[in-house]
Image (cartoon, rainbow, N blue to C red):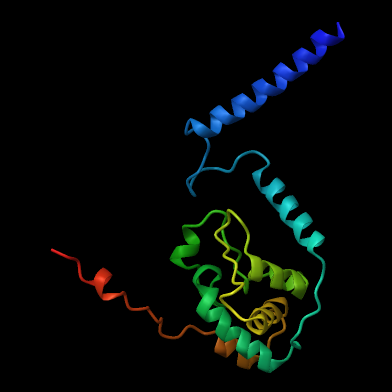
Length: 185
């Protein structure tokens, strides 16, 4: 009797895993950004992210929350973050509209201003898998990461000079390499 129960449980587990495998490998799983999320997808993703970030340990900021660092953080933000997260008093970007999950608009209402600086730093440094949020470790200096993190953590209290620095300027479009820019015939 016990042997049959154990075999039944093992077969049940194998059937569940096999069914999940078939669901994902047969093209039935929602993978397009316009598809509805899986049941509990958001809840599980947020729980996993929160638990992982908390496990990493808190770091004290290496730069103070002052106007100079906010201004420097605003320049880093405009060059690296605004394309997805947007600027104050500006509508969502076309890139943000095409992403899933949707990137938070960091200067509209609540958002990272509710998060501790160290948590924003961790997210900017490491990125978040399967969200489109890249990690900037090795691409930005530690000081730049802390400056933008201080800016975002204090986004609800930044001075007018920093808000002015966050207004959109002419978009800098990087030039394509000659091999890409000129199609070969």
